[in-house]
Image 1 (cartoon, helix red, strand yellow):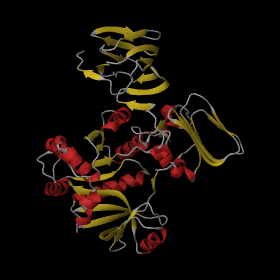
Image 2: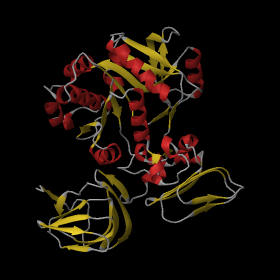
Image 3: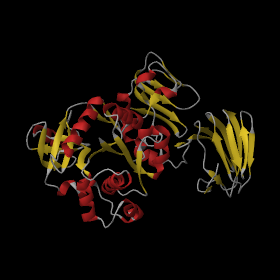
Image 4: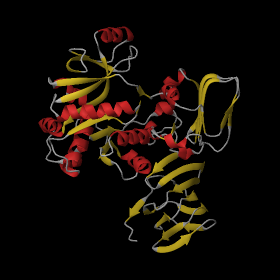
Length: 445
């Protein structure tokens, strides 16, 4: 089975755990099956890790490709290593260009035949194993040519105003699509449900040849490389508007299993197996309270009801669960630099920011290294606090361990390579400290 997972968004509705580069799908809040009873953070997995694990459980030979922007590549590599293909969008151009680019990537880069089918779905649904069994059935329907497009229609559990609706011609498990309806109000949604309407969860399947042919009708390109090179010139348009609304041959497969869109704190906490993640305590008068604490200090909650508390380097949220759905405009008004990010080699967390200095805790995974780089406008000092590895400073290599201090002046080329899990405190010193002040070099080991 070939699967394209669409991964986008900044997920600001889950602030302070999410930010412009750490979207909701990378937050580790779901207990791993093998981690029962373990409070260690390694016992938790993110949405993207959970979905990938479930896909491989349903089909160990599945080819998984994640279509995403450049800002998410490091987090994907950190959480899924090199086991997954990544179709990187040079810039955001909505779902039609993203899906076309990923489809061309499968054909031209991965060598998958045009006659093969692919399933496209969001990277972040909260679902059980039956969903992935259904994805494979959807893929089979597309492979057999049931229709040019085969959609998954979610059996609605209430008259939601958040989703569009698919109206099938019959109530069969697989049926031709009669019409599509835009996101309605609650009264109209109930009418759609009475007509047999299904939620449109953005899950569909097709043969590669179908989307490539449609793409060539709308975009002037030759292959994946050509499309990638001119990606920033493409019109921003959704797959629904560009393809679905103009396609007469569409079928829908009904899915009646659990399916949740965990887009707000209210819905996310419903899926949490535990009320507390991190160092936090509730007294016995708390009711329906969830706490996620990434800070190295305890959180105590007493006498609260229907509240979510989330603490990270980005800030602290204390909110009524229902009101948490309205967080976005308030977060948009907060102007703050990124305080935590996952990289392909590990992660970093900002500890302190002053006018002419910044202090960061850096964690490198075993066997990984930073890019060989330099800064023109700042000096840096590294202090190794755990693990061992080696540094390369202006071509000079030396082993490092706990307690070692390495000083780099502005313009000095440097990197660190971890033999074991390695942590260091990085102090940046300069009048203009900026993430853009970085020049990368090739490193021959």
